[in-house]
Image 1: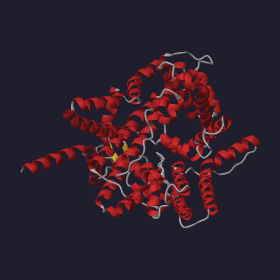
Image 2: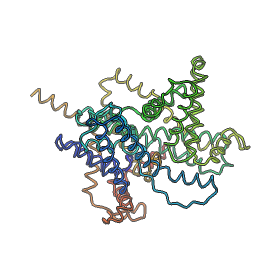
Image 3: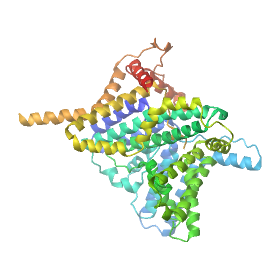
Image 4: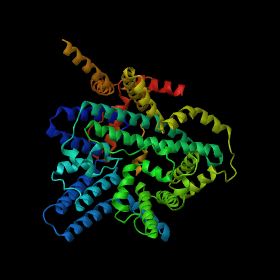
Amino acid sequence: MVFSSLLFTFAFLPVTVVLYYSLGKNFKNIVLLTASLFFYAWGEPVYVVLMCSSILMNYCIGRLIGEGDVSRQKKKLYLIISLVLNLGCLAYFKYFGMIISTISSIGGWNLNVSTPALPIGISFYTFQILSYVIDVYREKIKPQKSLILCAVYITMFPQLVAGPIVNYVDIESQLTDRRMTFNKFYSGMQRFLCGLAKKVLLANNIGLLWSEVKAMPSIEISVFMAWAGIIAFTLQIYFDFSGYSDMAIGLGKMFGFRFKENFQYPYISQSITEFWRRWHISLGSWFREYVYIPLDGSRVGKKKMIRNLFIVWFITGLWHGASWNFVLWGLYFGTLLLIEKLFLQKSMTGWPKAVRHVYLLLFVVIGWVFFEFTNLNDVLNFLRLMFGIGGNEFIDNQGIVKLKAYAFLYIVCIIATTPWPKKLVLLFEKTHSSFYRVAVNLYYCGLILMSTAYMVGSTFNPFIYFRF
Amino acid sequence: MRINNKKNCIFIQNMVCMLPFLFILAMFILHLVLPDKTFSIEEGRYLAQWPDFNIENVLNGSYVTRVESYFLDQFPFRNFWVEIYEGFNKIL
């Protein structure tokens, strides 16, 4: 099920909330687990079995590792078994097709093997499971004794299909003991509505511009149009994904959980390094915690540091999708980060702010070209269009007409990527505190009404992050 | 009496805060209560109906798709929402 569908917002959510709050304390986790399994089974009726068996297996391994006096070697063996099984599962379901097609294209064979369909959310929940097992092995946490709580952690529907990646250590205590207050529910609901509006009102609509540009024959795309299109995609992917994270964090809050932030205004960054501290934070910290640091991070010599950086960014790219363009995209950012780390870091502080910002945006926008086109030829083609190589017009009438139609949305989107609206609201709260409460409530009522109109009016729109 | 007034005041304030959620709940209840329509004159097409349960359809995912289109087609005051949507699109 998608959060931004009518069925989720107007049926699944109210039923779950009413059941959750009307049943006693002992039933809350059971309600959450049942709802989450139903939520997953709704889109993936068969793969729910896969997820359940994966939970059961890792629950057992967690207990084997963490309990009693098991020798160090045995613990290591259990950990390796768990890593092989979890990563093997991910590799089979997500990368099997890619491996086969790569082998066949290198060897020039024609391999016709049927590949399995991708279970939704497998990249996210596999990482959550790994964080649990590895932390038990490191003795950072005690193994979860209750199978139900272990399953609640993995399947909790707010973060099940598209993150943020929640580490077990962060919510261990909340699983058994969490406070549900009126204010928490209220602010969680507001957060959910913000995310919903980001997805339904901003991402979906600015995305239309990009799909129009993408559908045009490449001879007709002017340089101006190419930039307008890819910037629209830049905005779309941000609102899509950060909107989804907002909805997840909000829903979690409505049920009494606290998830960490996943996005912190990435497009206002001043360097690529800062960008990756603000974009998809939970993934970045997962890789730091479970890949980069175990490889000894940057404390080793320069050569090893470079190697580690490339390993991490190779996997980060690959994690985003089973296609080589994602690897290229990861390595592109890895290289940029390395250049910043080795050469630019000191001199950059002297650059004017505007220059740093333009530098960041330029490289991020180019990065999205690698991300969006799965075919390498298409990537090169589009980059050529963007930089006017190939003799297309610089600007044409069609581009101006299109941009005029989207001008308002463009401006709203750009403003919404900055922290300024929030700052203005806080200022307003200070100066007009009595009027503020009414205005805020009216604002959220407006958001839900408009989102509903857009959800009913536009055809069913699936979430683009699903293919990862 | 005074305490009662204060309590009432807080209750009303909380209710106001909850308006979006109450709206969601109300829509859901209306959805259940209002009778399903079979034909839309405005669009000139038959609207999706609640699908019959069939284990094969559940497993291949078509049941889910049909429930979703049922929910979309039978949403309370559907025409009203579509009108608002089109109104916004015209302005912007």
